[in-house]
Image (cartoon, rainbow, N blue to C red; front, top):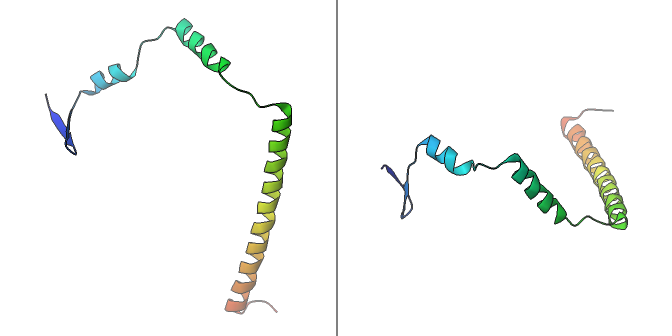
Length: 88
């Protein structure tokens, strides 16, 4: 068997087919759907109030970021036109 060194740890080099078989477990579609339902049952959904408040916060922050970048863009435009001597 061929070995690779990773620091002080020796790791065996495996053929691609072996790695593929180790990472791709065989699961039936029924078992997969059953596990998906179990995981979906664990989800804690936000309340309607939390969703509305979070949405408002996102809209406000996007508006503030838009105003900030507008101001920065205008300052950069003024500085560049002054340095290059463009304009009236």
